Image (cartoon, rainbow, N blue to C red; front, side, top):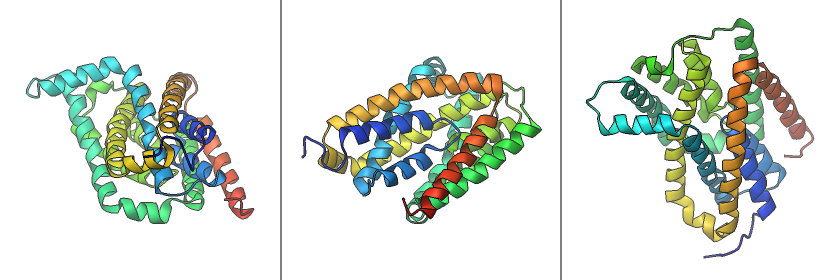
Length: 276
């Protein structure tokens, strides 16, 4: 096995780690940003694709650190499945919300990779999501239910919304937060549920990818670059999550809608100039 990176420099690994950490939980699509960044850096191949997924470990760790009390209560509820309580309701909602995207991803994952992982599809998803955010921001619709009031039906609806995020550029955070708020959850509750669902979904996706291609990552890049990428993703995700929570509470979604439209325009320009 290689002990040093070959096709991915340390600087490139750090850049991808920062992009992953900053964008994973913002409603702007980490996959879209990483897809465009990889094209700009001329990084291609299965090992690079797997590396991008592997550094999600850092983002996962950030949620574990920031929401450790909630996660501890959910773990306690999982150990006592027949004991009623708010934590059990949240845990059940997370379980049912995870299933739709997991099933669709398992069946159509290769099709999505073959047909939708490109700058064009990402730009389209950025634009559609940007318009959706601006429409939502203008209409409002913030609910008032706390996270503990989430139901199985809520979990199913949010889970079905998460399926849309299989399209690169859509943003898992965007569709799950908007779905939860539309169902009547308060914005803080919707954001927290989205983060917790992301924790489950990312853990499953990362574990699956490492089981399939973990050896290829080490063979291609050694141990140093992936390790640094994970650490950088963790640190940047901590900052990003804290900033997002504070921003949404005081100013709402509108900034992300305009950003997505700007990103869509930039990606389209890169395509027209044949840069990517």
